[in-house]
Length: 515
Picture 1 (cartoon, one colour):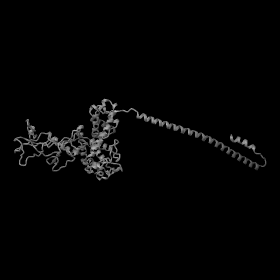
Picture 2 (cartoon, one colour):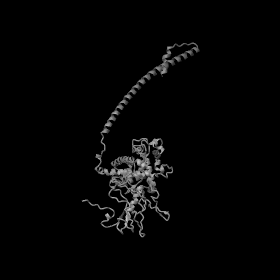
Picture 3 (cartoon, one colour):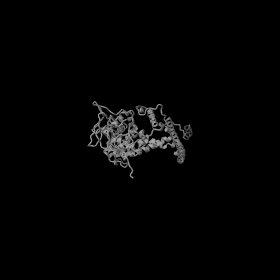
Picture 4 (tube, helix red, strand yellow):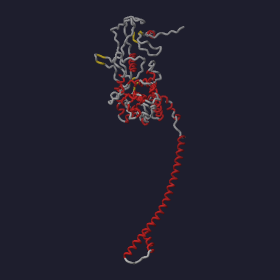
């Protein structure tokens, strides 16, 4: 429509000449070109004006949006500042708001948390696991079915927790106060016990104690440490292994895992330090002390959790890490401590019977001083009964003297006296120790305890022994207990009497007060 109107206006301005046909064609072509050029010029001017008007409107819109955006940012910043103030002034749950019924058992719960973190679980269970009810009947904790499914594992975790906690504290487990106490004391207990092991690490590993100071950061330059950790764990250059060479016999990795947990010496020392205090390695007289963990927790057995805790703690001390984090991964070494603990405990649970036997036989070598098991008709007889439970007793020795598992009975008499055994009197064999033991010292304790509980071996003395009345049976007394003023000399012959003077006749001198 615009083109037709423009034609009507423009065309009358040109004169129309009627000549021949050629001139008419030329005139038509010229007129059409003029019309097109004028149309293009008019369209261009209109388009330019419209674009200018449109751009002006868009710029105004963009400017308004920018102002609105800036205003929203300012409002958002002001709201953020107000939220910070409100958050800082918000009321928090404090210990004062905890019911008195819960606070009354804080000390007992803290003691349990420390015990649970050492002998059961190194890392606290998730909160939803603590809220699970214990099934009836409860599942078997130390059984391969423990790790069959994720649900079975969670049920066994909460069952183990309830089994270690006294009955009057069971209703505290699902509370948030108990969960916070458990996490807090687990972290503190780990730092405390690992600190004790670090102080005695030189005795445990047979290396310079300065290698294990927190200020020493060159573990990767010590060949002995790198041999125990493996080359793959130095500086986190590669993915660390969950089973470093320190776990294997002779510290040599075995792809078949047949010698895993074969390096018993370091583990035995670590457990003794944790359970009987750090001086138990160098000063065995008069221990276990009253304040040691074994007495405080009432624990005299090795559990899979305790053994796994010992291995993980030793690996942590050998590494370059200085802070044991709740996340379960080393900050510098990238060692997966949480995965290590789970793998070690799971392996102990699956092979509990074999491991108990291995603990019993660990450290006992057959020699002239340490004879092997008794034999009957050239057939060896094992005097260690099969374990009825997958835990091993860890009884502290009552004397610093280390004796074999089945020591021979030797009567010590003066050199100038001769003693003839009565053929009619037979020496009863020392009963086999109870459940398996975790070390040489534990083995000695079990043998000593079993011997003392049995009926004394009575022998008739045909010759006269100085200091002993005639026709009085004698027994070999136990070695010294290490307590000053209470022990007896090893090998001393003491008469057996049931009279009122039995205490004095048994070798304990009667004290008289000087006038």
